[in-house]
Amino acid sequence: MEIEKKQCPYCGEEIQANAKKCRYCGEWLEEPAAKTGGKTVVETHIQETSPIDGKIEVNHLETPVKDFVEILFWVGAISAFVSMVHQCGVLDFPGLRSLMEVAIYVPKWLADLLGGLVDVIFAYALYAGMKRLPKPMSGLLMVIFIITIIISFSTVCMDLGGDMSDGEDSMEIADFLWGLGVVIMFVVPIIIVGIQLVRYFGGLLNKLGWAILLSVVVAVVAVVLEDESGAAKVIPLVLEFLVTCYVLFIQNILFADVSDD
Image 1 (cartoon, one colour):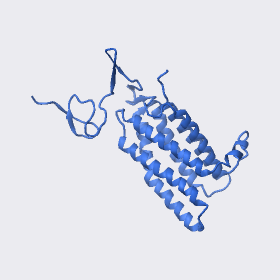
Image 2: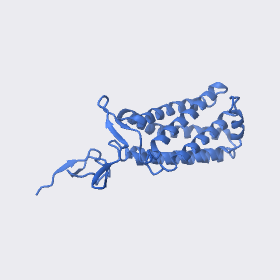
Image 3: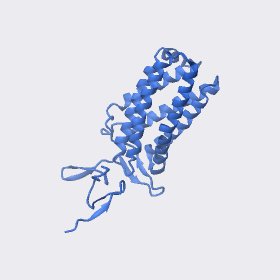
Image 4: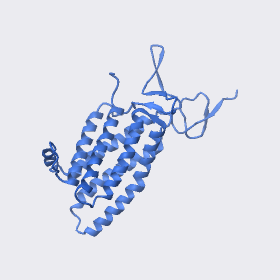
């Protein structure tokens, strides 16, 4: 008896027609289900496809970090605030000056270490949660996860080594090469991910895509104006902090535990 075959929509390999998961690339071909009391229950974090634009409405992703995602959000936001203060100095903002005066005493390397750790965990959470969606982008998200680890580690190393460098010229060259490497390795893949999220998904996942694209634009502007002084330098850094918090906020809701809802 000849076994019916079909082609995996993700890797193109030939698999059995009734297969629920591709044995070559590991992608789910349909939503995994759990049986409860003789009934099939499917997790409902994926909603119906919109008949208007064909986008899949996604407002929750099941991830391993759901139990402590709120803590990660606050750690990431505070770390971003401390890093911003170190870059632009203590500003005369109403109600924030006292916080900035405290934040300036927190080492920048510590803030970047904690912020980088949050970025790495959230990058993995997005990779893990997206694996169950029709367009998981597993390879691209894994690349971003690995690059996030490299960039976070390198940023902390630069923070620790910056004060020990004797030559300003060598540091400027190193900073330029580092910035160029970040653009090539990280910015291009993250832009692709942002565009894909906006193009194929609705709900919070769509908002995350727009927030990611906005964060890239603001970060590039902040880097370009890094050597400026006054408002030309401060405004992009403040905007970068606000956009970072917005990205963290969306991920906080997207990855949160909804079992009690």
